[in-house]
Length: 355
Image (cartoon, rainbow, N blue to C red):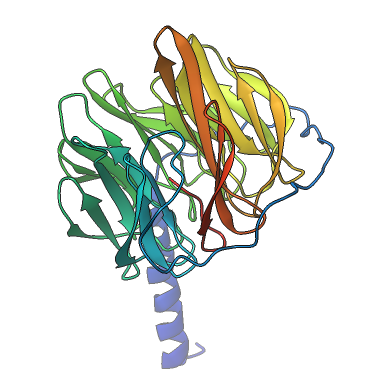
């Protein structure tokens, strides 16, 4: 009988162990998700660049920037640190370094224009700063991903993020924990406050849209575009489908808008009077909005690889309003919407989006 060399036996044993480990890893991931591929290809929208935008401005000193809507804003400046504009219009450099390629998330908190921000620090851990204090939560995040924060109806806040293990985690006033749901690498979850708690939308590690939270956990069976993240506001979700078009799903039904999105970017959705409004970067590089308050090409060029952030609501006497923050194709932070359009004169880090 031919004798098998010891080195060959060791190599075969290593291969068997590796196969067993891979099988174990696959067993703990969410089950395979059926991606939808039945929608038509994205509608191509005629392109034109925004005009009249100033060159990027490097923030260096605390200053009063235009805050035309009176709501807090957060962004990674082109210096790599977290900057915040509070509700009173004061803009601050917090002096806290952010991880390259990530974006912060902010909520209004307390009185007098207060806020709370969640972000991935340049150490790779989740940090918070604002009304509830400054803290390193000591929770490692996946590189290139960003957290999402929401104010809870019961008080306090809750954060959703992709941990450095690749699973969905939550942290905050309602508790901290690993939900054991695998996320697609390079994507970020979004969290919203709902009656009885919160709900999270995310791209699972199979490429499908999932939700998890107080309303239960569900595979929505809708395929998402690689490298993109969903946006959730109460009952409605907006996302870039694996066809390259903007889709929405929720209590108003599931709908393909037929509007083509820029690859690698994500939409943002906000609740307005009698419905929702969505902001997104079209496949032409321009900022578009669509929803209850109409569909429009706003004629403003966006920085490649970035996504807008929309805030919305209802004002007395029963009027809708929304405002969109975005990084312009000049590298500067801009705001546009019901309260007007303005270059806020603050330079942003390339590849990042405002919160």
